[in-house]
Length: 241
Length: 300
Image (cartoon, rainbow over all chains, first blue to last red; front, top):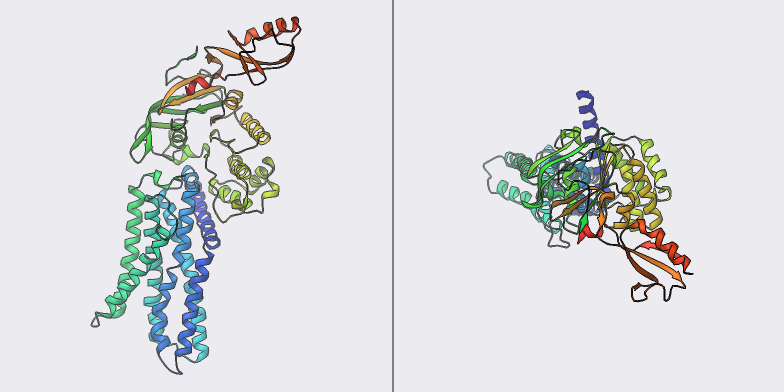
């Protein structure tokens, strides 16, 4: 019986996460469109600007994608704040979902949104580059694997985490002066700091810094959420309405 | 003031035990951000019935429901469901909770929203179809929740309560925003539940409370002010209104409220005698109704 109960709880957790991701895509489609659209637009501009055999695309493309992938966090954050305000969390907690689970769902939704932006940007960007004759060098692929992908997720998850914690401890506000309005700035900050750190430490392998920073950011995200879920009273997740 | 033959102790325990289920609060203090809303609340509920939770705004009704549902962790004391601490998942699976907030997620159509909660609750797909039929929301199933009227939203929200059968129902203002016909249907559904299950039911509508409640749990300033049988509540005065023709000179016109002549009696048992006397004097009585609800005094 305990095994059956655990199996059902796991199945319900997956189903809840799946529904949250699907809802996030519906709620945050504008951010999805903006993030993907801007990433593709810049990629196309870079391709046009890159002369045959040039390196402008290879040098810049891997760096710009994380800035747009961060927008994926907005969908996750919108779903989180909406669920809190609309009283959905109240029901989920009554059904036994823990605050940690609520945060985890928010992060999974963010990761899914960022993965869509990242995936489409890489697919179309690299496809177009290849079609235009820009060589997909080992360095380009290495930059994507060791900088673009980890920093995209790290930045988005960091944004989402700061936004979720902030919105949980504050009363809802609308507009730019709200967690939703300010969160993107937090999301872009780690990416920019990592870029500056890597560029200003030429003797150290660039990718040690980017991968290390990504791991550190993700560790900070996990620690922040674990601490918040433990320390925050459940009333933080109730609708203030 | 109210008089009652039922025990007024906050830990009063109704005598019957038929359903085998039990809600028990012992010395519970609970609230928000360290601020106590409920203080030292104790009661035991065992008999299948509707327990109407009453109290003025801010008395702690919603806080009580949230604490019993395990949403708020009490600062002190214990909440047990069938003897199991509410912190344990096993206790929560015996409860069904309806908040005064709709709690339907954004971005979902009505049917999707019900399936969402069915998934969370471990209910089956046929259960979703059943509640759609039960609440008569078939025509809403493909519409986004955000597009619905307040009454329609409430119906969808209530539908969730019937997704999974439970033994204990916590219903916080279930008929708010509903038209009278639907409110009646919901009350009938809840009355059906109360045959076998424990139902805690909060309402601001005193006439509704009197109509469906068997027990009353009145909160005042976060404490239990009264807990006992509704039938044991006796108002200190019993006032009826009589709408009648030909009553001039028979009934005093100085005690009128709208179309009704007001009469103060010792109790409902005096009504037939008064009606007979008035009819004997040629008064054509159209309607007789209670003008005061005994529950009003719980708010005073």
